[in-house]
Length: 430
Image (cartoon, rainbow, N blue to C red):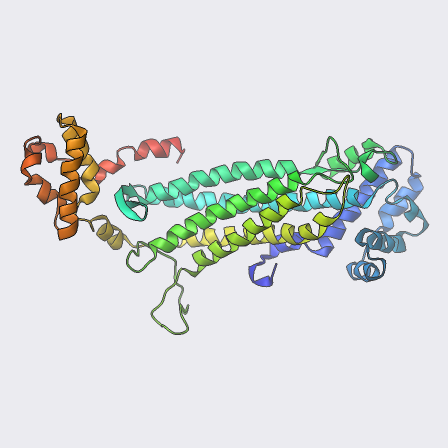
């Protein structure tokens, strides 16, 4: 991933240095397991444990000649260990190291993303509680519908984030699997006890069966889960973008001192973070398609997946780390424009209470079809002439036949939209 979108912590997971470090740990653990099985002399094991090391630049230099990353790595390690290096990688194939190490890296990245996602959940919870009773117009099809509260909007995102946390934990579990089963996965030249020992030390499970590789449905589930998370963040960012439109301006991204919005128009304050999040989510969704394409390989293995994973694994996890951190900060400092929220709530002159009026008429024994026609006729008249809906219906003779002045009480009250808010928040455990 380009430096612009690369947080340090997640980027370090995918460095050559970290990858080779995990490879070395796997190789040493495999030697330890084989020593316990009596296949490697204790003296040789001690020497391997003491001397085994690598130099990243040297490994990459050797790879230029041998054209094989694992062989280049083993060659460099052998330069440190000496003759006892003949026991390293005994009975193993490259994928035993590559796939098990990739699982460790995905687990590391997944747990970091889980931490970021938990931070998103907490800030959404804070904002949901803070704006629990701030009444706001709800919109369907982009058109004013009925009142909601801003707190309910944040609460919805909070609930969705909880589901994403559940999905991510499951996906981390799915990819926290290692395999050391040798060429084509038959354990012909290596004991399953080696695999069991190495995976336990790495805090991985052992796969029940492999070919020469772990099957890529695991990796696809992990990446598609990250794509779902990114898509949810895009959903929230898109809502913020809509609510920051000049003619709406209910929410607004924090605009720091000295910040510029446009090279041409000094007045501009644009929702650049939300737009950035929307764009980056597209990249992650594209990567999820590549991960699904990787499921299909030839026979017991090929390496058509390898080049793809070298790109999509680091890029996706690093990008999502960046996205979640930016979104947390965005919500933490979001500007809530209460006057505009109130203005928009009242913009239609009470038309948003049409259903309340409809139901009241039905309650008073008017046929639904007739009540709907009457309310819609009055509503359209108010809309076209920009006049008060409440005042008009109070004076409408057809309606007054069914409703007394007392019956009108409560119909045009925003607070009734909040009658069940406590119930919803209690169900969400907010």
